[in-house]
Image 1 (tube, rainbow, N blue to C red):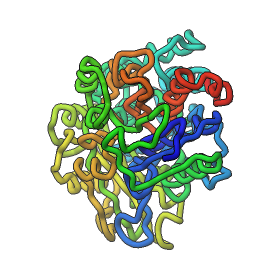
Image 2 (image 1 turned 180 degrees about the vertical axis):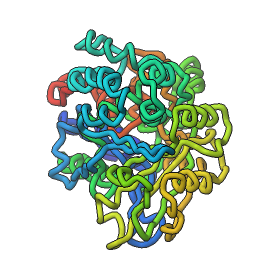
Image 3 (image 1 turned 180 degrees about the horizontal axis):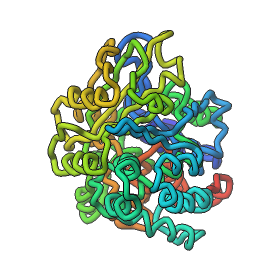
Amino acid sequence: MKQYDCVVIGSGPNGLAAAVELQRSGLSVKVLEAKSKLGGGARSEELTLPGFIHDIGSAIHPLGVASPFFSQLPLSDFGLEWVYPPEAVAHPLDNGNTVTLSRSVTETARQLGVDGNAYQQMIQPLVDNWQDIAPDFLGPLRFPKHPLKLAQFGLKALQSSNFLAKRTFSTEEAQGYFSGLAAHSMLPLEHTSSAAIGLVLGALGHVVGWPFPKGGAQSITNALAAYFQSLGGEVEIDREIQSISEIPPCKATLWDITPWQLLEIKGLSLPRSYQNQLKRFRYGPGIFKVDWALSDPIPFKNSKANEAATIHIGGTLEEIALSERDAWNKKHNARPYVLLVHQSPFDPNRAPEGKHTAWAYCHVPRYSTRDMTQAIEQQVERFAPGFRDTILHKNIMNTEDVQRFNPNYIGGDINGGAQLLTQLFTRPTFSLTPYRTAQKGVYLCSSSTPPGGGVHGMCGYHAAQTVLKDLFPDAQKKGSTVE
């Protein structure tokens, strides 16, 4: 059998990022993918009707554009084109208003009325310092290059979303808007550090917007894979690995999988103490997802919502907080917080002429099999009466379906593990080098390592850097520098 320097198991954005970094450092790399299509969570297919393209997993990618690693790669040369809706996010309210996240901090603040100045004071420093601090919080625990700037962000990020929103804002509009951002964390909004995701996603909306790839998330995967292969890398699909013995000879393996999956690989000689640490790794709630083929655009009462591809449906802080708390506590909420994505108005190639696509999901208890379609559609109807009349066909996925689509989504958890304070920088174990396992030559590169979920490739990049430092120090000098 041909021998490689490294073999990457799994072709999600992090697996491909690791493969690209190793290959461009002069090593020989092969990627093995269990499915018949590359991409992991970044795949697109016709889930409803012919000609209607749906993102099965990830759909909106501010971190894909802002990633310190991806931004170095010539992905546009391999077909990746970003689409930027006029507004990043829309948050409709029951009083008829809709708050939108604009590229302009000032314009967003203006919509928040008396809370405008408070919003500007909260978000502007993070926007101004983004380029300096992004490499630090998009990586493992280490001494930051800009400690004062990172500390300024950390003092806010380590708070609970509820506390920060109530302390900062006095109106339901501003509190609800920020809670909609923070709920992407899939944590109860009372939890420490739940504010971090809200701050980061809010800042990203001002720094780069909330774009998505033309034609679907598959375009990111295709561009990464094409670039990797142009460097000489090799890819094999339909190759599920259940044992070390099934892997071609190599010096290092990088696994784009989660801790519990690693424990199932036969032939690994992981110490019992390390196995116990992996067993204690905590996963978060799951998702229930619906994809729709539509006859018309979503008929929002307030047309401002149609200026964004991403719509947060949940209204007030109290409603959103209850929904997230329920999912965490293994309960189903009758009026769940809903993440709704409507890309086709800005990317007509997603559907036949004059038709549209949309998808939405809500957070549910991990391993839930309850059908939440009606609850989700009622939430959409709440702000877009007549929405159900536009539905031509739908496809639903409960947590079991979500995990079947991507085995990394344990129990429907799309983040590769709960984004708890104890699992932000030291996931999956308490280690300064979390990508390195307790077995020599075996590494993790999935979103179960820092910095966690999101299509940014930084987990894979840092895992590759660890491999280069450990085993190929001369090749490390040829690779990327994103610090």
